[in-house]
Image (cartoon, rainbow, N blue to C red; front, side, top):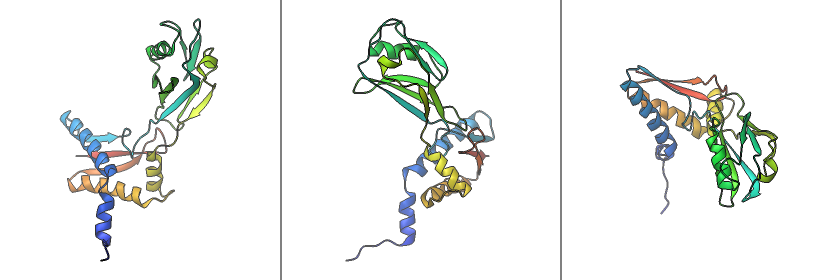
Length: 206
């Protein structure tokens, strides 16, 4: 016996994915929040698959189980962080970096006991972060350079909407999100996120 599905069934299966579900649920959650605060319009510019505008950059030191002596420095995103105030081992280094509360920066370690710096880049046309020439770079295995985030999927969604890229699945997913809200009586628009110039934002009116 030959098994087949027709075009309508195939399209229905393709649309039954988590991307559409997660996008609509995230937008609806924000609509409910905003409506409860007396607003008549919701704008979502980040934090969903189709709108992400603050990607993360991960920098991993090459030294395993690093230790420091004295009070050397790490320079990230223009902020100089002094280490050695709580101790000299990796856990203390992580604590000192996190205690400095540099916007967007979180320090942790991996299973190999390397220092891991995770930086959430702000919404801008260039998603980068610079590690400066701190005196702790050598023991931590860090390199002074500028790191660039990998483009999130939101950039591809934007390019598909603008017609500069072709991806039928992503185009259909955006159309299904719009149809979902239109069927509920909302007005929904895709607009350019001017902070990045390469991602979209959803504007939902009610």
